[in-house]
Length: 221
Image (cartoon, rainbow, N blue to C red; front, side, top):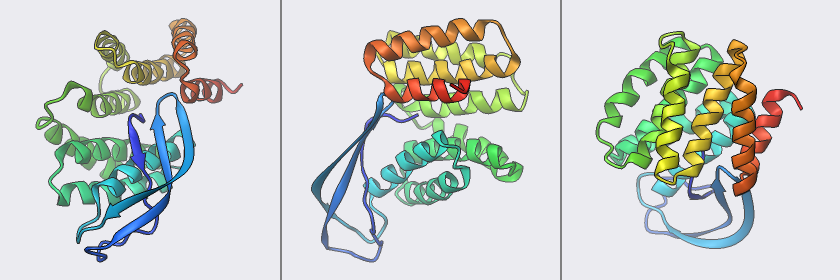
């Protein structure tokens, strides 16, 4: 569920107050793919972990999740969530809690999963931008399907996709449809093939290489 651009800050330590550091790696990430190039970016580090570092950890965790490196993703998300909470940034904390719930589900950690599932919707209530809530809503729908707590989770994901597409948020529309496709595929539903073809067509039209890769990997191609 990657969207936007993130600076990846390696080696930042909270105690380095007042310093301006230079970092060589900047990842520009969106649902279309991963672009890596080198640059130098000055960062003013404060006593608490910088917001850029929290964003970077969240983005890198999502790449780990793509590769099913759940424990690595969880470690990054825990750090990011603590940073967002300390800064009272509810959007970032809501996103990381929702993603943490997915990691905990994959790792079989039901206590952490349930705690994150409970926390994320509470934080979501403070989010005012429609674009900001997609991460939480998509993750929670996936969890509801996995835990059989909402038989309509797939339909809700498709509704989210339609809403995102109407608002011209193509990356989020694709993310929601991929999540719905995974649910249909797991159920052996005949509609899975048609949805996959639709996702692939849109992803190719807009150059979303990461989505195409996820489709291939899930299908075992």
